[in-house]
Length: 137
Image 1: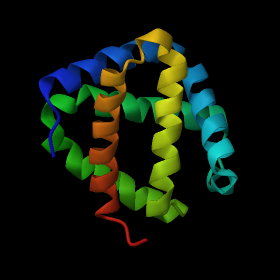
Image 2: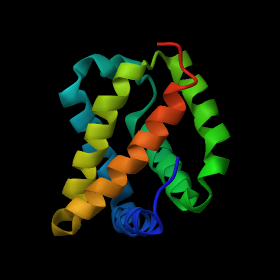
Image 3: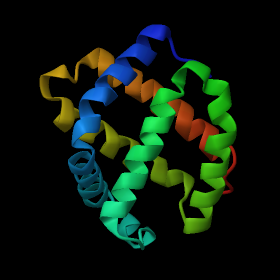
């Protein structure tokens, strides 16, 4: 489980450009997610603006912690257990990851380069693999 320093820099730099539009980014993310997989919408029972703030806060914490990935493991395990309690399944990680990549593409515009995308894909695989290791289905 590792990212190169270049990937970490690309992720942190690109996220810092999306963070100022975090509420809009969260809206794009959830609209995209539900268009990719409408069956996920019932899993979200709270106010979507609040959910969007939680999403962006979680992403910010993860992005800021990339220099110490090992410390993220217990956090991701706890997140997996909570999400499993909400009804999240391992199969949901693909549409979530794709929705996040689409959100970054929209938010970054021309700055969403193949290198930036590859760095985020690497991170998403680490997060998904770590979380799925604690989930039953």
